[in-house]
Amino acid sequence: MPETLIATTQHALGVRDSRFLADAAPVADAAAAMRWLAQHRHADATHNCWAWRCGGTYRSSDDGEPGGSAGRPILQAIDAQGLDHVVVRVARWFGGTKLGVGGLARAYGGCAAQCLRAAPRRAIVALIAVRVEADAATLARLRGRLSAFAARTEAVAAADAALQLQLPREHLPALREWLAAHTHGCARCVTDDRAQAP
Image (cartoon, rainbow, N blue to C red; front, side):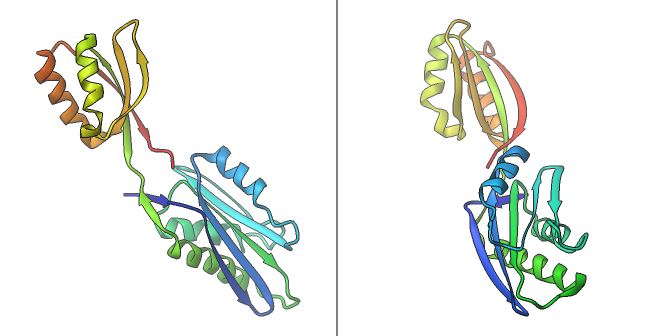
């Protein structure tokens, strides 16, 4: 099961007079990752290299370092730890000693990997959106039992007697059983898969 970070985390590393600082954070989507990078740039750093992954979408940047020496190793650190919906930026303050492409890749990838290893994580839970259509009395009883299904209300449509919920996919069979038992099969349950945003 993929995991994401619980909170922003940081790790510093010194390599032959250069200073590296990795910052990692959970993000909901690609736009959030790009916003986070824009807001957390170290203006005084020589380079701000980064990578992020959100599902099948990912991007990375070497920010002026030799091609493939920074962004790709950072992305590999994310993928090697099975993380998703994560952004990592590694800033470098050049100390005067060149590290070469291999040395840069080890420094950027290593700093990112150590940062991510130390970060607290949580599983990304597969959620499902459910529209429950039933009479008002059934919906009122269901609202009182939402915690039993780890569900939360997204919207209530009073006009057409419906309740829009979001709950872990594994709780859907129990919700359907409860509805069948309490409505004699008269309730309607329509689903829409989605992944939980961090």
